[in-house]
Image 1 (cartoon, helix red, strand yellow):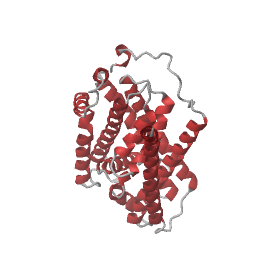
Image 2 (cartoon, rainbow, N blue to C red):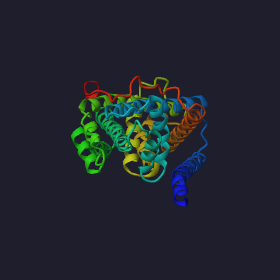
Image 3 (tube, rainbow, N blue to C red):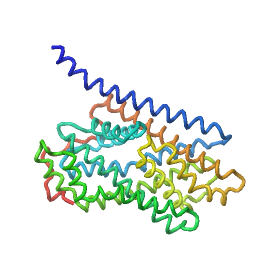
Length: 341
């Protein structure tokens, strides 16, 4: 009887521990960032900060949609609403040391009788690494194409290296082998069949989704600079620079395994933006402006993540049938002719 009661409380205790860890590290990240912003007497335009947060959440949407596509290709009947809820809330896990918390949160929110735990975990890795490899590729292409004379060569080669590290595991043949080596599907022979549905067509669709997402994240950075009063009126004029800076900073921060990429993001953004600020805004301290823009970008993105996570959590509690979670017209597994790509 006691053992049975203990088993019932274990999942609840595990969930509470996850929440406590996320709250602790998010609080620390937010407090540190606010303290650093307080060191500089900048005045910010609130509406542009709101726009930056909205563009950030919009920039994550293509990746969330791609994750759902991967789940569906792998034979999982994941609803749109529950997938996006798990995707957005899962971003809070990146502020906890290591990257395991992101996977735990996402899988914990998406798994059900319609979504297998092992397949869900594999899909998280596939989506995340696809996003990082695309970001690194975009950064390398833009740096060599537009800013060859401005950016240090080491940043270009760093982008190339990050692309290889993140991109190799997403090649379908490599990914399937890694998943099998990790033991996914050993207890379920149908999992191996589902993995065969993952092909180069899905990967190409992922690249298209992620490219759009990174451009929107570049626009989010532009909005932050507008809030600081150090960006031109035309967002397209310097959009390649903003996109390359954000993508390289985020990818490097992710692969560094530092919680939330703290410091790593700021260092790369500062390195790439100091020459630009020195040219377009000579009246300000370029180093200080670059550092403040990097720290402010992190704060805006974190607040946006907290807001959307709170909204989705409350919505799910108040209305269990999340409005976007439309029931499938059939419980059959999607046919190979409709899912193979």
